[in-house]
Structure formats: C-alpha cells, structure tokens
Image (tube, rainbow, N blue to C red):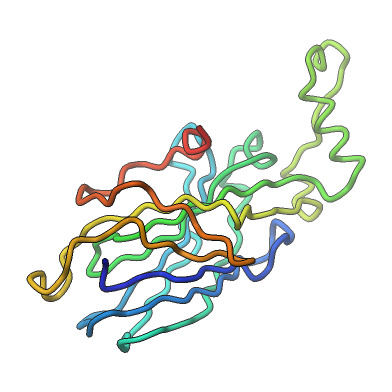
Length: 213
C-alpha cells in the first residue's frame, strides 16, 4: 500500500473536439501526512516512432495534502497539432497522466485516445486513402493540419493502463511495500487495470502500441 492511493479518475469532457482542453476529476486517499506537494502531469504522445514528439500539456501542484480523501479537477490544454507529424494526427495515440512526489514518479496512468474527423465525408476520404491500391487510384487523405477544427477525440477512459512504482516518501521506515493490486476506479464503476507488480526502477519509455498487446 502506498501513502497515496488513487481511487477514481474521471474524464469529464469526453468525447470532445481535438482543440478542447482535457479535463479530469481525480480522487485519491492520503494515508499519512506529507511534507511536500504532489505534482500531476499530463503528457500527449505525438508519435510512436519517437518521444521527441511528446508534448507536456500541463502540470499541477496539489498541496498541502491532508490525510483522508481528496478530490480536485485537473485541466490541461490540447496539444499543438503543428508539433505532431501529420501522419499521426488521425488515429490512435496515448495520453499519460502521472503523479510524482519530490520528483519521483509513483503512478502512471495511460489512456488510449482515438482521433478522427467529425465530418462523415472527410472520414470516408481518410479511410479510403488507407485501402490497398489507394495511391494507384489517386485517393489521397485530407490534410489534417488544415482541418483541425473538424477533428474530434475520444479518450478510452474505461481501459487505462496503470503502472505503480516504489518510491521513498518522507518516513521510509513507516511505509509498507506498495501493492499493485489496489484497484483504481474509472467512470461507470469500472476498475482500472493495475500492472501485476510494483517496481522500484525508474519509469521506462511508454510505447503506446506495445501496450495493446
């Protein structure tokens, strides 16, 4: 068990336009007094090919944190489409909601995000351009950089990937071993799936497509 146990994460505006800010309601339980604040961060994975396209959308410091149940709303701006490869703007990617204490990340929640055109004709053109032989037929995908206002996103809020890490808190002797079996609730009372074991190693790079395996 950790000093901080996240009990519920709800995506408040979902689905939404690509340009709308992300808005979460986060509820967590603090098991013991903490000397410092918690740092929450939301990161958008711009491409599975390179983390150089990752965008840190916002950070939020929460504290002082009283013992007991705490809840707050976290708002983060949408990613800049011009900093994302055009070929990766439409389709599935990942957002990472993380929390750290004294610069040590202890929980990471990854959500798949599907972005598509809200206009049926644009969606049809995009899908047709992906079919076999589309190039020979002269079928080209619309340029998403010119159509950002017609793009919408859907966060797969009921299927998060949760990873927990052992860290040193203020009083290491009083902190029991972290258990990764603690469920984290999602909307509609669906439990978030925690990894099978907590780790004390630094968080590894997150591959959004490997997580689907």
